[in-house]
Length: 268
Ligand SMILES: O=C(O)CCC(=O)C(=O)O
Ligand SMILES: [Fe+2]
Image 1 (cartoon, helix red, strand yellow):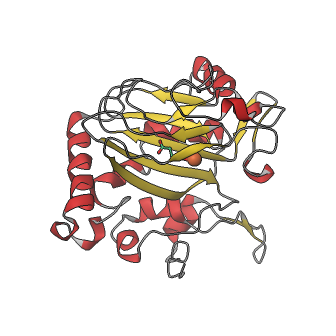
Image 2 (spheres, rainbow, N blue to C red):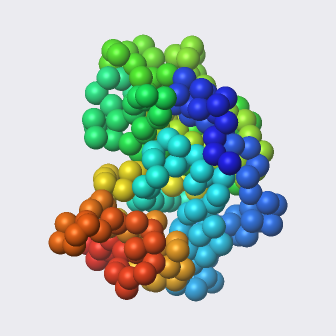
């Protein structure tokens, strides 16, 4: 159980890590089918499954091969605070290189390692649901940039062919793989190159004390999740000092209570 020493070395050195083929072919097929319908025929799905993390994709919330990594690189208290799925056609893209350098995404979400332990404030987990090759245009990284001591240099920030940093890299992996990266790593979702779509789910996990993304999950999606899954979206606080000893905002406490998840009724 847990990460291997080699995985920890790799994640700390580069800022990302791939766990290949953690999903079964049946799980992959069910989630691809759900995302196809979300993007192309949402009315064919019950309301609770019309977006991630509902329906078949809910197994990604707390997949054991993901949870054990998060507990090593974020800590024992983790929340899932944002998720989206993509059906990315050739030529579509998510955006330019961002992150990396000394300022980090924000110090409270920063990457650090102390006393042999990694403390990554926010970790993105990409679940690739098709086989991906290095040329396809999946998420690209500048390895090591999560620990860079100088701001990202403009010469290394282009995604244009022929102008790319020699350090810019991507990955190849079989369908059903999880790619973990700290949001402090300089990364991008470049133009998709393949004739067949990129089908993926991208989750953002953080420390229980913090909240980067404003919640956007629809109330009917959340209501359709099992209580153990909802627990990943509990409110961001650590201790309630009205009791003695203080009450800890643990998963177990959430499961023993009727308390709702984070508020979902915000207007943009
Ligand atoms: O779409 C991608 O490949 C990456 C998107 C991104 O920047 C992120 O998930 O933080
Ligand atoms: Fe990003």
